[in-house]
Image 1 (cartoon, rainbow, N blue to C red):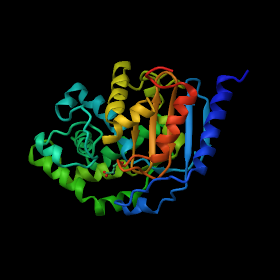
Image 2 (image 1 turned 120 degrees about the vertical axis):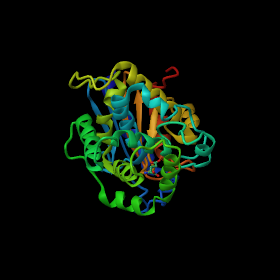
Image 3 (image 1 turned 135 degrees about the horizontal axis):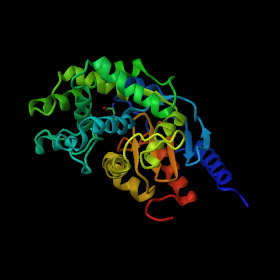
Length: 313
Ligand code: GLU
């Protein structure tokens, strides 16, 4: 009889092989020029189970731009600072509109729908920045990622950050718009600088899956036994990921994959199988909603074969 670990290893390898052969890869993000240079044929998948076993397939060790996946970790940090007061600055409802939509922000008088659309993440970044210099706030975010992944080698890709800083006119519009409603406390350029840089953190699938372990295990890192956040908070971060983690593709992701997940325009997705595993996948080609196409296909196959959907095996 195949052991659960052997099954997981086999399934991950099978999926990596299947994805390598698929012709439908989506389109790499081009609105950030540096991301347009990434090779769309790359694919990586890492699953870390409750016992710490690492199942890896494809380009699992190659660092990529985590982009909006960083928003899960900035939300975690900001909740640590502000607690539930944070929800006065941003909502927690699915947006049903594009990740960089300005229309909704006007309707809702500068209060972003949720912490994962760009406006919401910029507001959260502003909260982390308050009382600090941009360099200190960024250092705090990076050190948190290194701590969670247990890996000091994680860095920021300065070329990606500079590329977005030069071209991030929409994000500048969102930030200025929120500033006009008094939602941001710091100078817009400072908040945006920290935001662009945390989006430009580069991590491999293995590092990202390591960093997500506390969300899979009710706030505790199972390897060290250390509590990162209280159980209730971890559960709630997962719920926001489920409802809002894929922008206006969140319903489709929940329908097909059945796990909380957060995508980034670098082509990564962090997905959480509560009590079972932390999962990171990377396939740079995106679908029309700006979510990794093959990343979603791979996660759908994984949850089906492992029986991991939160809606029932
Ligand atoms: N840094 C990107 C932006 O602000 C993040 C978007 C994403 O990854 O979905 O446009």
